[in-house]
Image 1: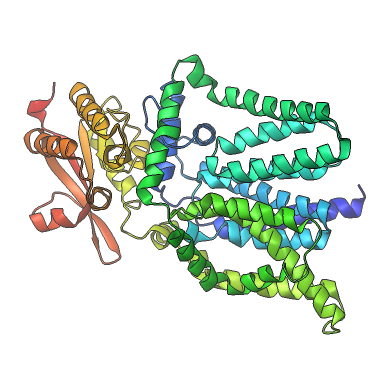
Image 2 (image 1 turned 90 degrees about the horizontal axis):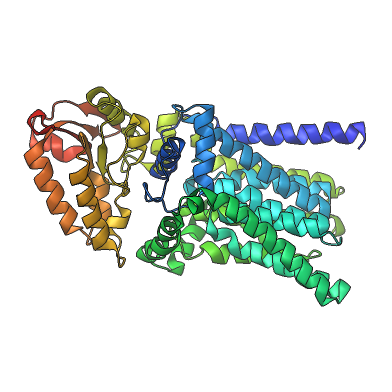
Length: 524
């Protein structure tokens, strides 16, 4: 590698990091959203040798728990470590986008795709500033594509093993990446067989890929396998997730809603993406296949962060479309330099994409959280309630959150008395819904919580038409007979404050979060 190439690579790396930091600078200390709270709490109990899944009903595969566990070793009390790790994974993913297109095409195409991938992967309307599973999943997913791109014409069984390893890492962050990985795997197998025409080599390649996947999977699951708790992982990640997804409804209307969102903000991107089809580049079917398999994987989902999966592949297609359009202008003698045309087009496109979300760059961490999630989600106030909990309870006391705000447990460093530390398993229709409610009640009787937090607004949303009568009735009687109201967090327009004590029913009705403490006469 020449000195000039090394300098260029360093500049590209610094440029990617700087651009990613521009998008992320005010998100590092933004309050956790509930998914992040779920991961952080599960990692916190794992650090204490308490198994998640068995003791925290978390719906995501284990890799996200391990990632948040790493963040706890960086700083167990701060919000920024998982966001810093997410930024590192994002930067790595964007660099892999560039590496892949540089290998298949040229440097300019790689640079264009990298530039486009940053605002696309970090589009805040997709809840993309959180340290969520999709952000971590992209790096091993694109790693599988990079391994294929580098080794597709080589006979190297260990590259197949590495492909299997990276595939397992991606899937155990989030399963939605399975179809794109399967597509790459099948293309590699078919192309290899077309070259060799040998069934033996085909079977060896399959063997090494599966071996890498299975060995990595075993390592990921080993804490649960060795403690005979794998059934809990299956129950949370596979069994319940089926009903969780059905609860949201599978409909293309969701895709149409996001299509409208993308058109509103990225209308110019659609033009250059469409130009990809005007003059199809080499291997066009492969990149289109990656985009379509990822789009199909998420197109029925109403959850914005799922759509992060398609962004690297969309950026690749758009960059190829820009290449084609620049070449078209050169041939029509509308421009003298294809490279300069690419720079101008990419710059205009990036400016238009950034201007569409310009307000996010000038907000405080709290205001950024309100922009993304609005005050309908009690994320700003969770840390305030947690502070009162730590004041009023000891580290040995249990705290129960009636709702879906596990970040309160993480902030306060208090354990839930039940594995159902969010209410989703208790309200979503599944064959075990009533059993889960009964188990929760039994846990609350066995380990009476010192404090109970009621997330009023979110409860109304998730219990709408699905009210868990057993738990609802039990909690109403329990709170009325054995707990006293301490205070609550109230919003007036865009200003929120902690109200203690609650002096009337009007204040109580307006509070997003209510904190109850067990009466001293009921203490054991």
